[in-house]
Amino acid sequence: MKYKSFSFLFLLIGFWACNPTEEDPITPNPQSDEVKEAIYESMEEWYYWNEELPAIPDFASVSSNEEFLEAIKFKPLDRFSYLTTLQAFQNAFVGKNAGHGFGFAFNSEERLYLTFVFSESPAGKDGWERGWEILEINGKAIADYKTSSGGYDFQLGGSDPGITNTFTFKLPDGSTITRANTKAEYQSNSVLYKNAFEVAGEKVGYWVYQSFKATAGLSPTKSQEVEDTMGYFESENIEELIIDLRYNGGGSVAVAEQINNYLIQSGNTGKLMYTNKLNSLKSSFNDSENFSKLGNLNLTRIIFITSRGTASASELVINCLDPYFEIVLIGDNTYGKPVGSFPLSSYNDVLKRNDVELVPITFALANSEGKAEYFDGFPANYAVGDSPQFPWGDQRDLRFGAALDYIENGTVSGRIQSQFFRPQWEMIDAMKGLRKEFPVY
Image 1 (cartoon, one colour):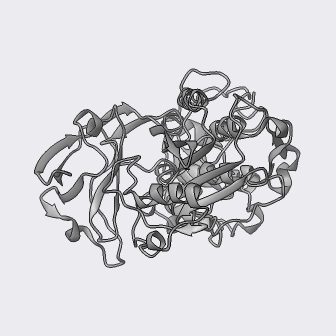
Image 2: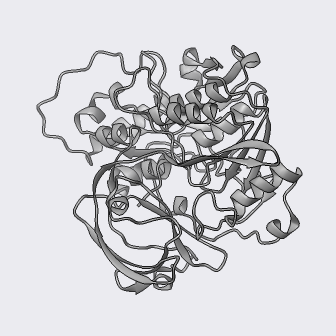
């Protein structure tokens, strides 16, 4: 069975096809020394940088599994390996979330705005929208949450249902409202916006895509939202496409492949999409994926809107398409994650029995030209600051306006570029582990 989904991740042939072991009747103890030893053993076997592992630390010197994993990670490059539970991992890649269901970001004046709201989340059902300015959280001004390092800690609590926070907003019409919102479980959407516009005599599609999530129950693993979106753009006969990944932290590689197969030209079907490489102990699992054209789109250029929050599977799409398209990046440099992972609890009974899901970096990916080392991210062709105060598809949004400017004039005006700023804090900076792949509050 070939299972692909996750943190710029995929699962190789047979990884979920092994026979499960019987449950051990011993009471689970997730923070035990036995679990820490199992983490180390699994890293020795599967970790991409297994030859760089230090000697196993004294278990008494660390207080948690997370601290133990942090102590043995290959620090120069590994910002990504994490621990979670099997259920949390599975839920994330089909959009089963818990929380308020929104994102936020600062504009150039360091004013905080809602950037997106999932429609079925508690925030979405309460009518929250992109472009609302957040003035206070739990009665405190935004500036009061600034840390000594220049970042922000908004103290919203975990994602557990039942946690309530209060927000005061300034709406686009200038009015002010205060809303209490209680976290709950919900199904998140990946497509935040799609539309088609006439620009310089061409039909241009605009697609805001927040995360690479599969639709539960679909086989093979794919996204119904992606299929519906591509059908829409085909019906609109688009000639250009802007894909907005500025808040997209990654997700399912299987869905990334699905998108690539819709975008690739018919003449390039069958050509190499990417290759993957595991450590020397697992080189027999090294694999490659070729394009297989879906749909009828016939594009020669794609414009991506990017930021430091553009990571993982988002970068995989850009990297795989680069040899076959004119690619233009507008916004800011991407995060830099050319490596991936898959969960290891199925291969270690101690981890499975204690419900500890270890998700370390296990492979690196390269495009058809061998490009694989982009730990510093992909540089933007045109540096353009974010303007979350404006709705999706509004030309006052600097990054969207810059993309239209490029289509019309072949460049981005100096006026737009002169307004570039790089915020000290972005949402991805506040997220760890699995949440970094799917950043949302």
